[in-house]
Image (tube, rainbow, N blue to C red; front, side):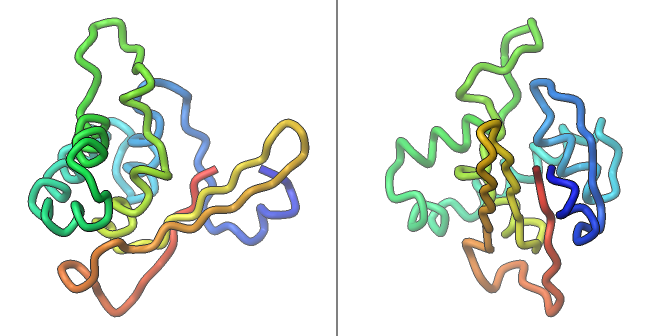
Length: 140
């Protein structure tokens, strides 16, 4: 992350890159231990299953919905390496995280070629978990 952005960010986490790194980051940001990544996965799986009909209006097809739900489940192989279909990807999961945790999720990407990108993910569904205060969670 570029140094000029750091003063504007409340909490920066350095999460070890592994098969659960995105889920570790969410757990730690929410004040849990990184070992709580399993609880984060389970909560997001429950969210998507419980509000399936609502999320289907967002993801438009059974195939895309199934791909995202499958990606939330942990890898079945024993090697500890997550294949691409199990990667924590914000384009697919950012809105679910924003909805479940009532946060605006911000992805900050610094490409090696010097291009900085910022993506915002807002709640996909309204009303079922919305509170008065909306905070943000930035992942870089």
